[in-house]
Length: 297
Length: 297
Image (cartoon, rainbow over the protein chains, first blue to last red):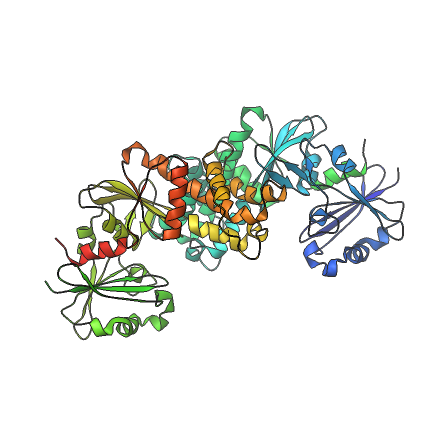
């Protein structure tokens, strides 16, 4: 088998990997060339500019992420759960460029039950983490945190929590943010964990009320304004964890957290504080997933 | 007793009422002269510009709302629950202008248990609604919805829900809003009630997930993008109602909704849909509260 190229082309970033036949990463390239930076929809020009030197008709290219969305190059339908890596690869939309270079646009993954949900790109991290027959819940913290259920190596369900986006919105645009110091205060672990505890505790009757207490508590002197952001972060992550754990329940022998180091650290601290065991997955989980895609069994 | 002036001076609006000795409103004046429009902190100039013709040393002026906050004219401390109208009036901060006109800046109301919470101005609507010895839960829908517990005519507790602000933030700044039509779609009652039901139902595991389904459901064709806003409104209001009702519980024989007509209508529809009885308070509840303040027993 010849070598293959996998591209993780998201909203902000372009990350390409060239894999050799044995699954080694032979070359890698990264640029701030996300789909939002592409002019007039000329994705091919950007592709050639970034990795033209790698491109030959013999090297198939696999594309994953928002490049396959409505705002990307080729929109692919979602593959409904249960979804395996082989199933995803089989549903790729194929295109051939004028010089014979072959492109495979990967579908995202969706579910309708118990709630409609979608992802596009994160599934590669999931497949990078789980072994072929393993069963686990993979937690991908972020702007839109994903809890992905994997049974015997197949994605059987997912839930998205808008934790990170809500934290950003509340800090930047809400009355809670207006009370925060102009210069962001350093992370306050005690305030963060107090926020987590509030989300899990009986005094929490609704997130809609909890987020207001990040302001009212400071106004009434329960804590300093410098700890509002950490407390708010703890409350939001705590709400996500409480709901995610309740749903994963006893059926989930393994919880694996994958993602940005700082965020993974916050989630790990919160889980440990609540007495919940969790593994930390590799930071380059996506690359491991791409390797499986590039070197199918 | 001579006549009195009561001013509801908020962030965006200035509303003044002149009461006669019998409690009749003799004159009223409203202007978009909220505290955010006041330059260089010269609140007195704005006061004289708006109601200078009413002002005499014999007519005491009572000020309520954000004019008594840190960003207002005279910051008053919060009065902690339980709070009566007489207790609030007794804690007013008094000032005398150079020409002898007397001003009374009313305190806001706060509570520390079960959660820290505050309000500044809404308490006048509450006192306008409840009779002296009545017991009820007053719901004030809005940017920061308040659920105020009144026992024997005294405010004994309050909860703020950031329902309205979150709805605005999600529509204006989030990935959910990006899918909404540029021209706001008309209110879709069926989609609104479906959102309410979701908030109360077993498929809702967290508001953080529910708000994302307003996007993912449309992406997967479960409903049209035109109904995202109504559905989101229903989910947010539903979460507020579910939490507020659970806390008010059996101890609340009366639920009274007070506020802006369109919002009160949405809350009433949602409550009726969930089989919960509720009274609708007068739209001018604040004026009724001011009347009691202006004509103490």
